[in-house]
Image 1 (spheres, rainbow, N blue to C red):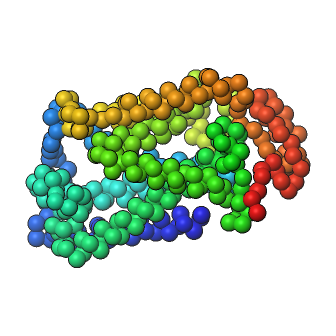
Image 2 (image 1 turned 180 degrees about the vertical axis):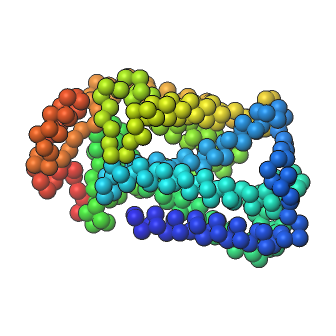
Image 3 (image 1 turned 135 degrees about the horizontal axis):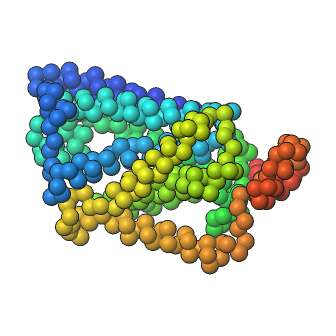
Length: 357
């Protein structure tokens, strides 16, 4: 899985390099000036221009929605207390730096008439930008490269989702947890069933996106809302109820900056969640342009809460520590019990996890 992530990162850098080098060369005779790139604002919606600017934040909100993948792979990382925070900051930093450069190049080479790009016959504005600057053959090559990169990004998300699914199954928090819990020895000690389960679910959701653009928008926006909720709840719980219990790790911004950063993150996550609920074309949407995220997200979150209060709360007590007895110090055992976590001592080498042959 680490090799797959490396391939994905390399492919991302290749498509970025190809775009920022090829487009300015291909459009050398018709590049837009600095005022067009940095100062001109276009509004193709019926929202006021100010709110349209706010809706433009949806693009970076979607872009940084998967930097938490490092967290889900932390159990497979060396020195995760330092490696995971470093991975998150590196991911965000790369998105900001290389994304900023890419956006400048796109703004410099795009057709000054944005409607000709958004209404392209190719169905993909990016393809039209490539075509206008580079022609048919180069466009086909770059779009194939872009499709491969997007496919690898999808695999990366499945990898992260499968680890999260396995962790919930290990704790018995999901339906059919006993089925998804086993680890495959044959394929290198990975949660094989959880991985294929996430792939099957992704296939179903991907098929739903073909129903209509509104369905695709709702699914993508629900992913943003779900991620933001998952990020925001533990941060909020920490600053409101967990200040005295919080024990800083080796990567810590200090008492002076930690809480202000946390509240800034909470405000931004709430803002992003609300933003994802708005129809992007205007305040009077049709059935086709309506953003159904608020409906679908409410159904998903409501269903999860109903499942918990009706059944899961009767038997789910939180995360379970499934680790060999001699791998825990006396202080760790005391700390775990003080947190109210369920300690299930097991003997090596099984460490409490069923393994497939």
